[in-house]
Image 1 (cartoon, rainbow, N blue to C red):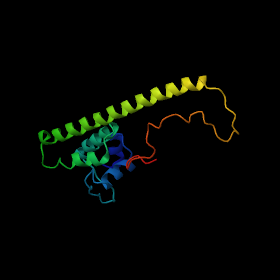
Image 2 (image 1 turned 90 degrees about the vertical axis):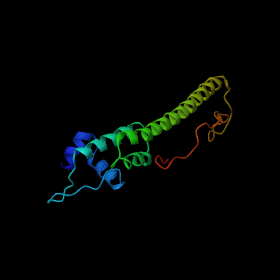
Image 3 (image 1 turned 45 degrees about the vertical axis):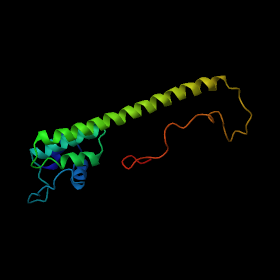
Image 4 (image 1 turned 135 degrees about the vertical axis):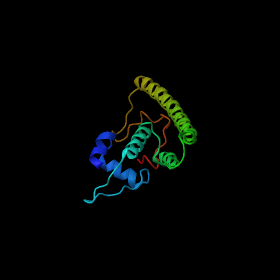
Length: 147
């Protein structure tokens, strides 16, 4: 099956499919006489798994860990690994939710205080109205989400 059909079946772009193949998440595919990659049903199922895992916020590294277990191993062997990955992701989200709840409270407090602060005389080059707002979200990014 050519990449265009696989793209329609999985909801992934051909570029994403090639990217996942290049990263080793999808085995290298044989090429037809005209040079096009040929994919099978197992590739479609793997790509659907990858797409869903990405939608759940699982990193490509963790997805690669999971799919690398598949060849020659039963579902009963890989399910505990997937279970642990999902639990880790839930823990990450719980921490983020807590962080965002704290940030929301701080923003609401700052908004309330801002309305009660008198205007200050400054030279219009610097506004210090938010000077006391604590930094709750670290500046910078991660390997998979650089800023």
